[in-house]
Image 1 (tube, helix red, strand yellow):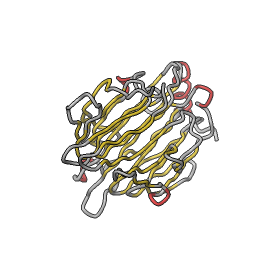
Image 2 (cartoon, rainbow, N blue to C red):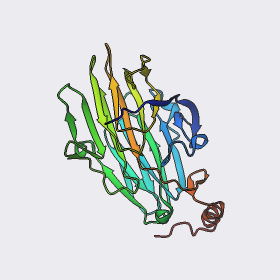
Image 3 (cartoon, one colour):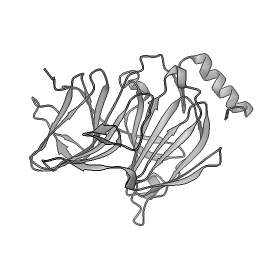
Image 4 (tube, one colour):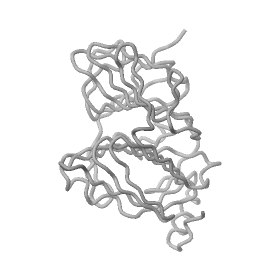
Length: 284
């Protein structure tokens, strides 16, 4: 018999400042390790005020993780120490595997009316893949399939397979699913999830109920962390709800984390920062 996931915890994202002075909301991060294993951090950098984001995230290193940037408004310019340059525009996703090490920058630019909207998720890499070759997966909005269910729910599939439709990002170490879901008013949405996987939803518009036995509505900038089970059920009343639905297989490995580098031991962290100081950080 299938069991519906209950809510383990509801978390309101909190204001913080990162990079060169970017004002954003953090749904979870360092203090929640290992609750969201294999995920490390989720940041919400939506704003209609250019000074909140224009200073961006200048050159900085990463090792041992994957960063997933999903832009819904405006654009983000990026570049790296390997010579890559690009633009992440509204609806696009960049899935970066930092692996053995990369130095890059991300500079939000907003749109014509200064609107900037996006999310960055950090996913951990297993110990055996910490030093894998860095790579980018650039996904444009046109490459992300959208399906509509019989009840009118719209689902953008960044990663995962839904009813035979495969998202453009695949072969990721933690077997993730990354969906952008919009449920219309007075509708119930049920979605199967893999038992044992970490599953959470982050509401980005409207309001919905994320557990069948609870009446409390979850609204914008709020994260729902689920207990284990076989499916997630979301329902709406008079307004729609839009949320990111994300899941992945826990690594169950030790985490040694300092700034933009995540390894398994303190010794590995010391080595990474020493190599960065010495100019030997980039391996490939």
